Length: 142
Image (tube, rainbow, N blue to C red; front, side, top):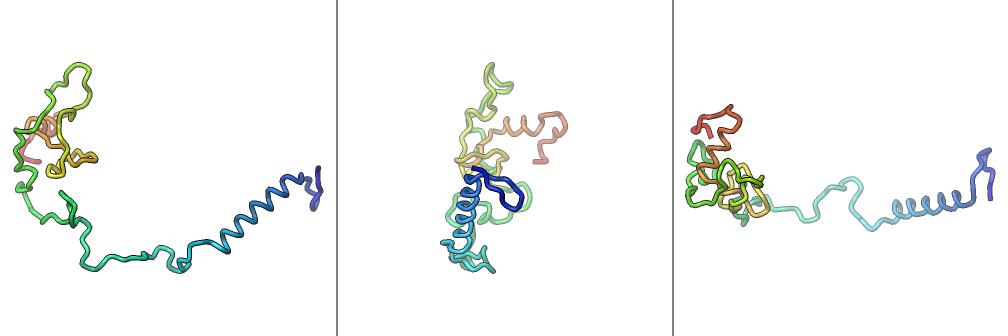
């Protein structure tokens, strides 16, 4: 059934659909469930204390680590020779350089991470990654 409104032809279905959508939008706007003030819509309901530190209680968190300058960072002093590694060049059919490595929070500081923490790299793997591409072969830089 076509209806003519102000010179525009439309159907009854379109008018009903427009009315339903308008009603839904109006009810959400007027009677929404959220009663956060409009002025401060991003305010936190339970703010953290002033002394709160994000990394408290999180193993290997950068937030709670003391700042150390130079090569005396903890993860560089780990027993890298005890970690497993994949031989380089990679075996035939293998595409994963870190397939045998463990990922633990204690190894964080590594450039590779996953849900379990950071990759525990061997010295040989660190040297290989440092020298790949031939543009940075000095081992003492990182």
